[in-house]
Image (tube, rainbow, N blue to C red):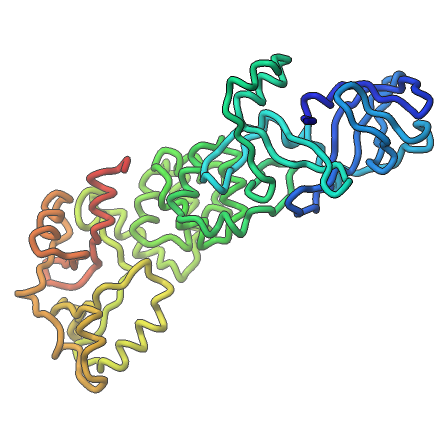
Length: 402
């Protein structure tokens, strides 16, 4: 079996058995998205200390005892660009990579190389301790460790020089919490790169799941411009929580760069409340309707605005002055007649408890538990509907490291 570690620094010979140099690195085509990418060629450090590239079709034999060319070196040398060739030693070995099959971050300790349909190819990535000992020259110890190979197709590569999008489609299919766990295990630059590789909506969901301390570092690393683009897609309560973590100067920069549709005035208003009270925990993104709105119109509103909300369980009912009157569940709305008004099917204030902006997280949790609610309305002293606090908001407050 051939490995990168057993081929690197081996001697290279021409067809006259003349020693011409040593293997300095091995390259694969950077755009090769096959299951087993073929080896494009080898980078050779010649006897004169020159660096030359020889493509694979000029190689007659691959062996850990030496590589033999089909002809002489001068006839085999070709130009190459690192834009098209991915050097395995420089860009893959020792790098942290995302194992999409196991949803974890691992380190590349070695690379398994061999023929596929007669073409030398990269077979797998070795992330086992055995691969590490093989590189250190203790190959006889590898049998003491369980092999752990990863297929190239299950890898998402992260790094300044790596432009492969391989695995990205699989990555975004993971739950945001799983991607967040991956980001947390990467260094700051890699974590930032991974967030940048995601679409804005996915990146926002992932950022919501990342621990507060790392959130703060990533936002600083991304910069206000890039961060604001991602933060725009976050739910209002999560956005406010994150802004509260930032130093005053950075939080102002982020707020100033938020788009108009994010309603900066609401963000600033929520920031005035204590973060452990209803005012600071609430979100202002929820579905509400005037008491005389027909059920058919409410359903149209839900269809139109549902993409803006993480989940919709209730529609909150208000009067002409925005005062809270009650709540209607989706179940009641679906079962109601299209021409009915929402006030006819909603639970009134007496049956639908509310909290004021100053009530603490523990008290809100008790109310949610007592009445078996997924969310509760937040009102001011005039009973004007200001927002809602969800079970998720309370859990994040009471169990921040869960």
